[in-house]
Image (cartoon, rainbow, N blue to C red; front, side, top):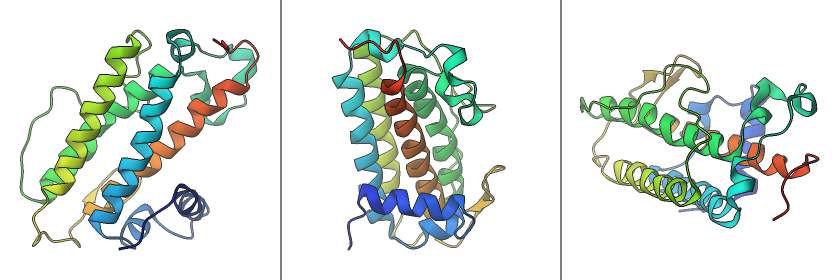
Length: 195
């Protein structure tokens, strides 16, 4: 089993963005175990950011004037908004992955649109705990996929085409990478708290 590095994942992301690879094609290059380890790495990076930043840094948002040209306005979000969004979208992955293995689990929180459930009022300690719990839940779901699961079966993601189990995990990884980069860009803005 080969370990995916952050650089490997960024290169895959670049190939997906250029249209050379689909999200599902990228996911199918790796085993579920390799993808789970890559997800563990991306989540550990996010966890370290949450735990290492102050409350002021986590809640800080750039002034709209500084970020009007940012892609899809994502740089208008605070780190807390990005992380709460990551946590909420996890249920979307879990629902689709579960359906691919015959589960019909219901979720109390399900995002209905881009940016849904991005909140800026979650205290640092709670945010760190929620991210850790969500990460463990997603990794446990991946580990629980039966060995005889049909890895070719797919479900429509609406935004990223038909995804297999490995494609759904790759989507979670790429989503993490996007938002980690967005969070890290916050430090480049004038006015970002340096405490």
